Length: 110
Length: 225
Image (tube, rainbow over all chains, first blue to last red; front, side, top):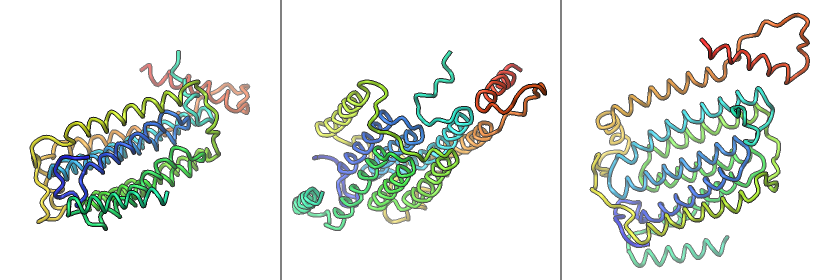
């Protein structure tokens, strides 16, 4: 991997972080696609959000720009709100039917 | 695993010799943190028990925090540990225990035919495209320090605070609105529907079926006005 700026990047060039974030995102996306348990699917979404956070911080260091770190701040807030509402929906669905797999969530089907 | 680590360390040493300014300590920290992050992520996906998934998620989050520290981003590393590992994962665990779904899931069963090969192909295609794109072009293009510079003369917290309260003030305010909306939504979702007045001869001890029928009626009544 060649290229770009890496002066302030903790002495390791940023491409390594970006590749790691890409792999982490891929694992999260894969888990989201194959798992049936809604809670584990939520955790896979968290993995993907963390990969995005790592990318933001790496770009903030590569471009010497604080904006990337501020964006991670906002991603954290959105992730917290998402988890609260998502788990609320899961609990509300569980009250009606005692099952955890995404296959059973066809309540909205006509 | 040990062979891979050794190979990566050798590559790291070679890279150090080539560029001259990446110390072995940095590379060692990066490699260990990356191994923690990846093994935790794989653990989240393959663990049968949701509780194990949540604990593996904690491991991944700590690894990410170490990578933040390695990039001199101290504040976000602390926030990562406090908010993610401290609050979000605890929320996950609380819901898992509350619902009593900490039983194991049969991973081998594949409800949708061809779903897993398709998922593997899709994800492999995506990540290969991403890495190829980074390889054949530049990872970063654009102007440096548009929204404020990350110089090492002032502390990371001071820089972040200044930026949040000046440049990003409006998004910060919108964030508060988002949090309020999320809290109200969670309360609305968690609220039990008011008790339905039923005829005295109706048998209420039937379990799920009898509970769900009046509840849906009640939902309809709530929507209509």
